[in-house]
Image (tube, rainbow, N blue to C red; front, side, top):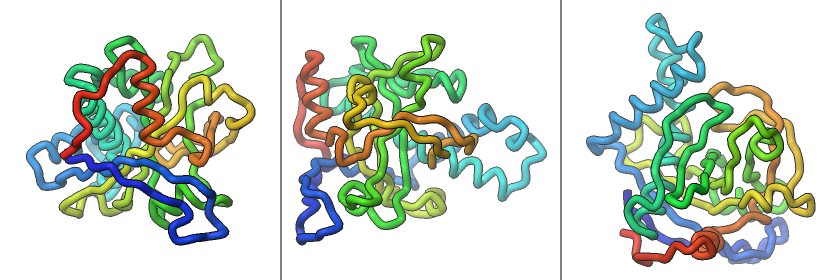
Length: 245
């Protein structure tokens, strides 16, 4: 999966509806005709069957199955993109996938030092720039409330965000799927009441589509990819390459 850095200047051109910030993001392109595209769809289906066992069974009609796969594909592709990006930038085996246990206790990625990364995704209809720059409708970086405050839940250390340029309904049709690694928030940021707050919502990448209590930070207050790289450096990881092609 190729990666390229892009800069988004929220005030270029000037716009009173936008915040004043310059973001560093990473554009990722997934070749939907590659050999592993079928593996991605199979993984999405397996995930859907675990989360929605009553909807996803042998009697599931084709339309319902395709919808369940679409609901899961965003998460699967987002996890893959972050995994490949981190290993390419900081060296192979820096991060690994974790097995899916339950939807509530899932850790998407595990760093070599034991720190965990949860990956969440959204499909903004008005474009990536609108999602991160618009003051009023600024998109949210989210984590489940229980993942921060309930001792029975598995702690998460970083909450990574992905925004798709390709819309969900097109994920199985287009030749190339375009998504952006935006950055995210640390656990400490999610616990900071000056920028984080609680919200009851149905997350767009929630396969179960259940209203859940989340701790959220608007993307205007979250780290961009430059901030994420610094987060990794603060833990002792060094960039192996700055060219992502």
